[in-house]
Figure (tube, rainbow, N blue to C red):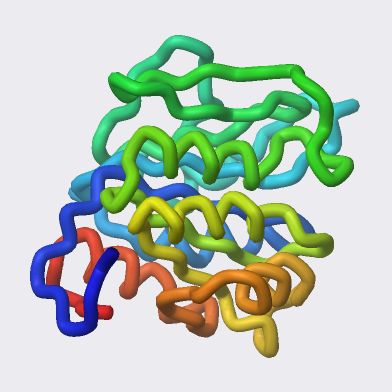
Length: 200
């Protein structure tokens, strides 16, 4: 488990979960990350399953990173953001491949941040870094707890300043979150943790 003052951050993946208000929050975070961000990112944003999504296109236009809808079987790549498509759970597999699932909704949602975070915890253990942003409900809290149990790191948007406090509040109440930050500070914290220049 990361100790205080840890100098080396050997993270291999960043996973982000968001819901209501999440598009704006994702634009703020992903738009502030550098083009040479050294690890892959996976994102669950709750979307209306009845419509084709242009979320990846919207985010891609505002970010230096490559942002795309996740596809089953593709490999994670550093500096690429893989976004869960509507109505599909996004899972990370051993060996760094992705899978999509239509198993039952979790807490009424599909994709589920909980399932993504749980798969990241299973595969990456202490090298997992997950972040919970604005949203209603409590998706992400259980998965973040698994990440912590495996020695990974959890960052949350500050519930008091989030557009919707539900998801950040659920994770901060149920998990020993490593960092609770206003939205504008999250990108810098992710960069610092991944590059080992920020300690916990």
